[in-house]
Amino acid sequence: MPSTLRALLCLGLCLSQRISARKQTLPKPIIRAESTYMVPKEKQATLCCQGSYGAVEYQLHFEGSLFAVERPKPPERINGVKFHIPDMNSRKAGRYSCIYRVGELWSERSDLLDLVVTEMYDTPTLSVHPGPEVTSGEKVTFYCRLDTATSMFLLLKEGRSRDVQRSYGKVQAEFPMGPVTTAHRGSYRCFGSYNNYAWSFPSEPVKLLVTGDIENTSLAPTDPTFADSWDTCLLTTETGLQKDLALWDHTAQNLLRMGLAFLVLVALVCLLVEDWLSRKRTREQASRASTWEGRRRLNKHKDSLKNDHETQWPWVELKAGVEPGWRELCVRPTEEGVTAGNRGHWHSICQSIPDDAEGGRTTC
Image 1 (cartoon, rainbow, N blue to C red):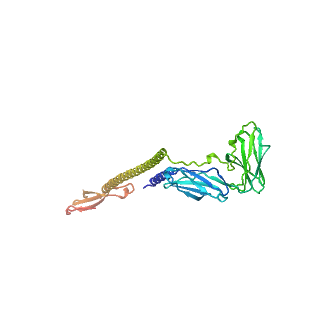
Image 2 (cartoon, rainbow, N blue to C red):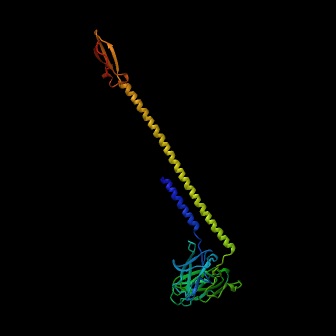
């Protein structure tokens, strides 16, 4: 098989496997914390991993290593699981991710979730300057102070716990803000920390009001863990319609893979047929060339034999002798046998014989 055909064959197989593997990769799951990602020390944390219906296994990874495994029952009717982490402490705080398996296929890894443990240090104090009531367009500065030595301070707005502002200082940190608008109103708390995942107790809330705004208590929840509504785990069971859609999606994927395999097979057969035809044409051309060359050599050999015969066969002549009772037998070459280079060296040879010599065959 020529190198070109082998290369095309390998390319087709590689593309087939890559496309098939890509089609068989499951989408990545969604990981979130139930209630909040900030968990007080020694309390239980709950992480939810939402994958796909039919998943038989879920794995929770902590800092890149396997942490826990859950197997839903029945797997075909549940699209996720919950992982419970009891007795939260600084060793369990960090980055978590999850994956799931359907049959022999594993999903992609989920996005990373930062899980924080709180109540690890003393309680800081939070204040705002020039005051908690300002007019729109003014600038304000929050001050977070913690007498216990720390290196990092964090300011959060209740209800927006994902929007964390960081500032650094030994005892106190400043958080400038403004010009303020109605979007800045609400309750704020601060934390002190030595790293990104172990925080102090939350400070008492400080409510920022903008002059002319109507106070809305719903923007200032009193829960120090800052419960965000979208952090709730949304694990559902599969309905009949969802099951039919999942079955149809699985069938469509199988048909797509079968069609792809058929196209690759047809392409390989075409390549093999083309190679066979090319080999056949090459053999026929070589056979015709060999036959023509043999005939040409045979004709050349015949012409050579004919020329040699005409050139080398001498001409014999019997003439009357000069003296009575004698005759002369003369031999000379033909004109074709005499070349320009030896023409001066060739001449007739004659021999006198008596008239009464006995007959016979003479050669020369």
